[in-house]
Length: 168
Image (cartoon, rainbow, N blue to C red; front, side, top):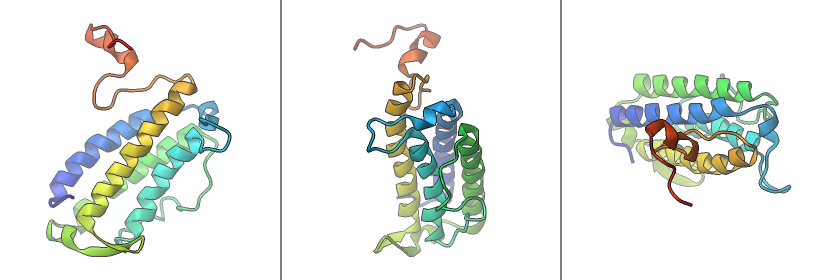
């Protein structure tokens, strides 16, 4: 749980930049990739990450739904998803930095039938994004895309560091 707005903003900067790097790799064709017919597509997972920023923050009083609607259909263009996320990530950072202070992170809101402190909600938002980013890496590989490294080099990036990729 975040207890400092500054700590959240530092984490959000890193995590949203890494998320943006993944979204920027997506292609229109790759959005259709699913692990199986009855599972979410890569496009739906990516769009879910975007819409959750709006949906979850609405419960805290931060209104970002003027940027996208949580009910908006999945765009057919990868650049639309990446562009929407870019705008949302910046808007969230700006809103939290301008409207909340450290004490405000202790305010409780009703989320999903529970009382969550805003600092906890921000942590859940980041964890939610990380969770789905992991799913996206599998779908991206299945779609033939190069996966960017997040917390270290991806398989394809080891050569840039002059090292062989770890053994499989």
